[in-house]
Image 1: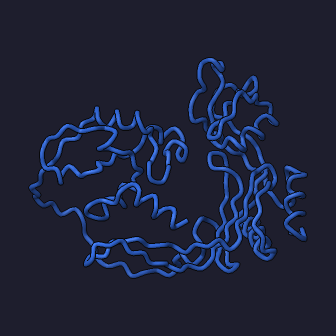
Image 2: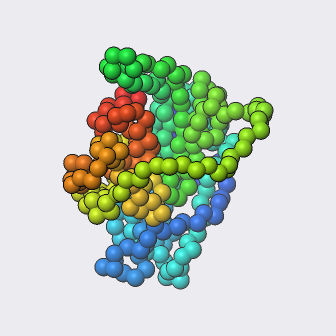
Image 3: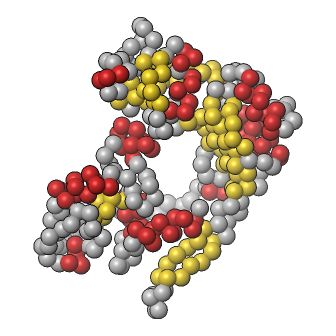
Length: 297
């Protein structure tokens, strides 16, 4: 690339939908569902609202409504039913790496546009992590700062349409969300491992109340109360209504039938936060999970 600075980089890209060296690609756009009936029979809901609300009207679509997570659009006459395809310019992997290296050399974070895509470069982001654990002797919560090298990243596009990620450490970049130091290239020896040998286990199973689970989700929503993850926002329609429901006090600790309060005794957590919560006995509280997440950002 021959741009001399970040300003010219973003301005040049914004002036043309086909930056030099980019390739034209046919992309299938998959709706996450039909829009409410009031918007008409051929209006569809899509993710990637920031991008599709701009690029599809350029291609004859009608923008009906835009929200933070979704956009409702009507396709042009003659293309009223899926599958939907558009042709659009995208950078190759090699060009993405070249852009990331140039941004790193200029040493500034930026937020803007490349071609028709939203883009963001983050320079030398601090990735230190604060590890919080309970001292097995004193029972006190202790913290340890885990030092990591700063990470730089380039993101082009938007999930739900098309996107590319480049991540690097000290100017060494690789395609993907992990820096090169996370990518193992050598072949590790594979020991002889076996699984599947049957064994008999005697255990006690504690019954879950599906009505209590439903009422809990109706109250809090299908949203992780620790990290804020909504599966539908991340995975589209296949993630709709997915969420774990965590027992604040494990049923095994109670050991008998009891009157469950779906608001006080239960709380929605994503699979990851639920796993971390039970990484300790007694489980980490939602407040402790939130504090750990906030400290790691």
